[in-house]
Image: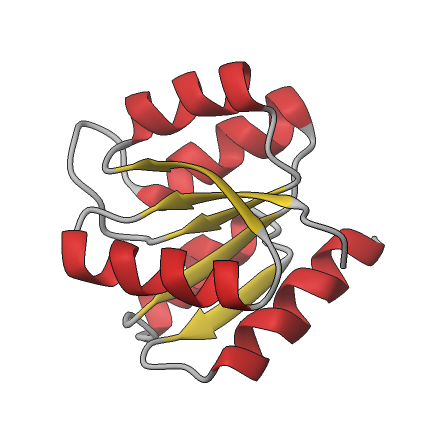
Length: 122
């Protein structure tokens, strides 16, 4: 780990702030925070993150799964879902996007670190 750039896509401000704080404490660089798919795509283009942490239910016209598909297809950047949604239909849709990780909220710092390190190693 050497300050890899992480983009947070989360529409709940307090959760985004906690993720930001946790990532920085783990030694990562947070290169941006987005609350919807359009903002996420703009930050991917401009900031070129090494990994994207993606909530599934985000504001805007497209959800986190559709945004993740676009990021992976257009930029081949690892996407890790960080979500509280683990129902069957959501898992089926998430699997279609071939995520590089899936973390259920609430989570421990080590869960976050392991998921990021595994995603970066691929």
